[in-house]
Length: 272
Ligand code: LER
Ligand code: MN
Image (cartoon, rainbow, N blue to C red; front, side, top):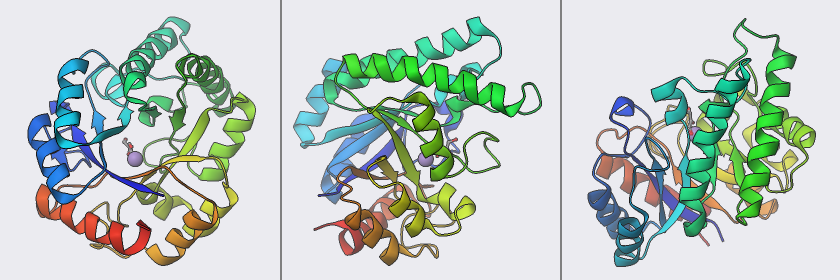
């Protein structure tokens, strides 16, 4: 069974980012539960920002899970990346992600590595950057495995990284890293830009997908663009995907409409 989740951004510097709820964690949990979501996904400034006991109470109160925790604030706030040519900066990037793994683990919520993969961007040759990234991910996947957790790696579109743009690039990286608990994130927005066929890419990544960002072609809520959801849903079902479909979309026309549109599309295409 695929479960639904909705994103909550707690990073003021990312207030223009593609997250449904911003700033108010208790309010977001209340709305998410009222709309029937199973879980929230948090984008936090660090692994130390949210008090785990308060979060536990909040989630219990609303019967919600924690689907995943984003690590992108390491890049947005501190310019950290897991492919950095400087070893001590790379270590800082790994420490930042480890703190988020520690935060998520008691909630069984994996950390997501998206923009923290960094870019080669001329500073490094691409292979050198990919080697650094693979070494960082190997260390982080081992760290997550010690806590019984997956680590989620997200291919991003070409305007955000020059390293890993497609699920098949991601699958090749997973092979290099060689950790069973390292899984891919299929973000339908990035895939709409990069994949020849979103459904075929999902089918080929069979068994390797650990999380889905459920969104439309224009990064608005599912149903407000031209994403071909039927073949995508069929491909996810055929591959036995049982993780979260988490809405990472702009709060347009507002957060509540975006969240409830997504829930309608989730029920239409992915639930049951
Ligand atoms: C994060 O999940 C994402 O999709 C990225 O576009 C953020 O940079
Ligand atoms: Mn995403």
